[in-house]
Length: 395
Ligand code: AMP
Image (cartoon, rainbow, N blue to C red; front, side):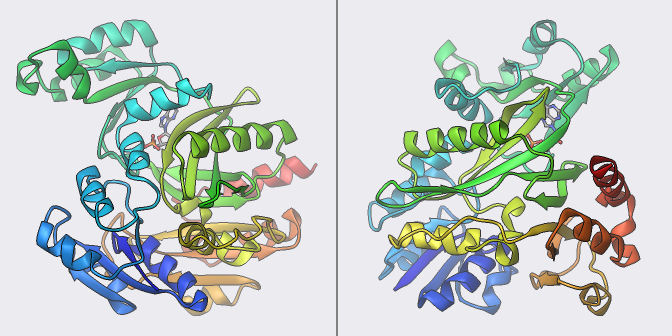
């Protein structure tokens, strides 16, 4: 059985690695000739809008899934006329636009930060008046890893951002409904959150669901650096709220596969920030530290196999290797450390691999984190802060 995957980055790479033991074969489509999956599977290098390449890609496939949420919805729909596409293209559509996403969360009764649409430069002042400062301005589409965002704390920040926004005329705003379709920015209240959490959930073809424990995430410059799984010091009610939210989204979209939702924990409550209709960086720990990895469960779901247990095995930390990588021998000298290198050439800001550390208790995890080589003691990992925090939690 051959599965087609749109996008050939590290998520696709790890999907294939999880799928080979299940007897699955893979074919990838990615516009970049550098896509790392070329090392381990058939790869078609073509733009997502190349119809003849899409037909060639789809020929003989059992189904198509994706590892990149900015695959054009038209590409997914074009393929869906030929072969099942899972998760359904409607999930891509909901996740590609922050406004669609927020409206879906609201419709399903999932709490989010207060927000206002910002159609153009002229609309920014009214939005700031409504939301207040500090706030965060985000592009509705194509933003990822903190790109396309401006934090607004002062009136000067607002005027600087205003100059970067397009004028109303530049957007070709002809009618209200058209303006609404193309709303390019959203202004959100800057949430003074306690921490960031994410949930990974999976829904199978027959509607059964399973949810992983919540994960605590530490970002720097909008990029995930470190995840702790399961999140420590977690209220049972918070885990329950995350599971309820995930199941509501999965069911509403008739979803099949793994879905991630990122939250802010604020005053003991969860506010949903965004979702990703795919396997997710904050789920990489599941490879070694859950009974079934997110990658295997995604494949089980789309193929129609029973889902595997989402229980964690002990506790773990996942650290992203960004821009450059540490000396493998120094990482692997730490007990229960696992190294994953994606085979990508180094470039600043690029995710090149990750390390997962496993332990049987939070205390043991903290001590193993402390043993990591100097690479991980750079400020961007917030490792010292995480260790301080976990020490004070235990006191
Ligand atoms: P996003 O692209 O929405 O995931 O945002 C990237 C990062 O910016 C998040 O992981 C947060 O650290 C921060 N961030 C985004 N939105 C907000 C918000 N409304 N309040 C506070 N921090 C935010």
